[in-house]
Image (cartoon, rainbow, N blue to C red):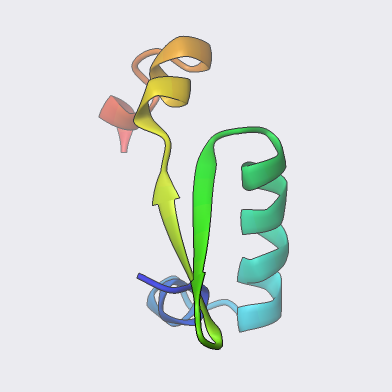
Length: 59
């Protein structure tokens, strides 16, 4: 999903979603790739398992 789609899905503005994804990327928890005008976000499961074991199981 791209940042805008995720923002719509959780009902927050695109700019807010983008800011939070930037923070998560800086922490090493997500990876972002840019295609044209869109930024696509993916979780870095290895980092979640390393620093927050079991966290994703609670969602």
